[in-house]
Length: 636
Image (cartoon, rainbow, N blue to C red; front, side, top):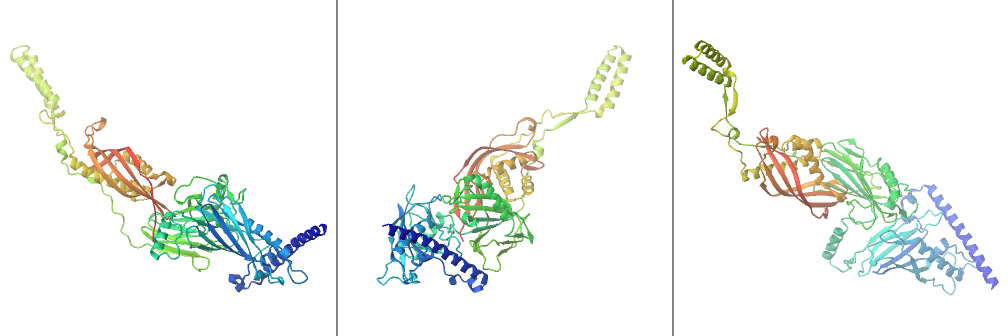
C-alpha cells in the first residue's frame, strides 16, 4: 500500500512539472511565432492551432440547464500534463485520473451566469472516459480520441430563465493561442439551435422567450418572419447582447451618437477599476463614467459643415439584462461585468441646420472588430457598418434642399375700435363761470343795486370769459355712451385656435432666441418668459431623466368663453377670457426606441388686443393628465 501511495504521489508531482514545462514550451513557441511577423500567420486564424477545442451541447429547460462537453483527449496532455511512458504508450490509470481533473478544470473555466450576473453552480453528473483499445494509445495519438462531461446547472431563484450568459476562460497562464469553445444551444420546446464560436473572456448572452420559443426547422418562412418581428418588438430592436451599436441621429439642431456597448467589451478598451472583478458596484460607477467620457472625448471624429465638433456627454448609464428599453433613465444598481451594458450619449451642436455631416469610428481592438451603425434622419432610417477590415469608416451625409419652417404670424383684428370708445365733449369751464358771473352782475346793475360796481364787475367777468375760452375740461358725452365690447363665441374660437396653434408651433424651433421671437407674435411681453418656462416644463418626461419631448401634434378639443377682462388696470382693455382643453403628443427617441406620450391639459387663458393684434396675456393650467408612455421601435 505504501508503495502505491508513493507511486501516486510521485505521479502527481511529475504531472505538475510536465504541465508547467509543457505550457512554458508552448508559450516560447507561440512567442517565436509572433516575432516571425509572417502576414499569413498573423491574418489567417485558420492556420493557428488552438490549445483546446471544446464542443458544448447546451439544453436549457425551465428548471435547469444541461451542458454536454466534448473535447479531444489531447487536452489531457496539453492542459493536465499527461505524458507517454518509456514504452511509448500512455498509462491508462493516469488518463482516467487526468480526465477527472480536466472535468473539474472545465467546470471551473466554463461559467454560466443568470440575469443578474450571479454564477450558477455546476454539478458534474457524468464523465465519458477515453475508450482505450487493448493495445493502448501510442504517444501523439490522443487527438484521435475524445472525452466528455455532462454538467447540470440549477437556477437560484426563479425558474424559466430569461437570460443566461456563458463565458469560457480556458486560458492557462502563459498561453498565447486561443481556446475554441463551440456552443450549440437549444431551448426546450424547439429543435432549432443557437450556435456560437466563443473565444476566451468574450461572454455571450442568450435570451429565452418561454411563451414563444424559437420555431422549429420545418416551420414556414412566413412563421419565421412573424416570429422574428415579434422578437424584435419584444427586444426593442436589440438583436445581440454582445454587439456594439452606434445610433446616429442627424437633426436640425444637433448630431447625436448614442453608443450601446457591453461592459465586458468596454473593459478591453478602458481599465475599469473595481473591487470585485465580476461586478461594478454603484459607488464605483461615477469614476468609471468619468474614464469613459475621457476615452470617448478623443477619436471617433464628427465633423459638421467641415468643422470637427467636440462631444458633449448627455448620459453615461449602466444597465443590467433586465432592462430592455435603454432610453429609460435606469435606476442605479450593481451591474455584472459579464452581461452588463453601458449606454453613452454624445451630442454635437450644429448651430443651425447642418449642410454636411461626417461621423467616424476608429476605436477597434480584438474585442471590437465591427460596429453596427443605424442612422436616423427625420423619418428615414438606414444601416451602416464600421469595421476594422475597411479602409474607410466614415458615414457621410449631405442635406437635401428643404424649405424653411413657415413663418409664424400674429393674429390681427378687423374691429371698428371707435365703437368701443366713449364720446366726450370739451367744456370751457372758465368762460362758462365768467359768463355766469357777468350775467349776474348785469342783472344787479339793471335793478340799480350798486350799478357802477356791478357794471365794472360784469365787464371784468366778460374779459375773463374771453381770455379763458381755451381752458376746457373733457367730460363724457351726457347722452351718448360707449358700446360695450362683447366677443361672439364663434369669433373667440377662431382667434384662440390660431393663438393656441402659434403657441406650440414656436417650439418647432430649437434655439431659445428663435422660440422667444416666435412666441412674441402671440404672447404679451410680460407673460413671455413665464409661459415659455411653463410649456417647456410640461414637455419634460420624468422617465427620460427630464429630457424635453419633441411636439408631434397638438389637438385642440374644445373651448368656451370664460369671462371678460374687468379687473384692476385693464378696465378699458378689449379682450376676453377663454377656457380650453387640448391633447399634446410628445416624442422622445434614444437608441432607436420611440417613446410617445399623450397628455391632456385643461387651461384658462386671457386674451387682449395689444398693438392691433390679439395676444395671450395669461395662461394657467388647471389640470394635467399624463397618459402612459407608449414604446415603439424604428423599422427599416
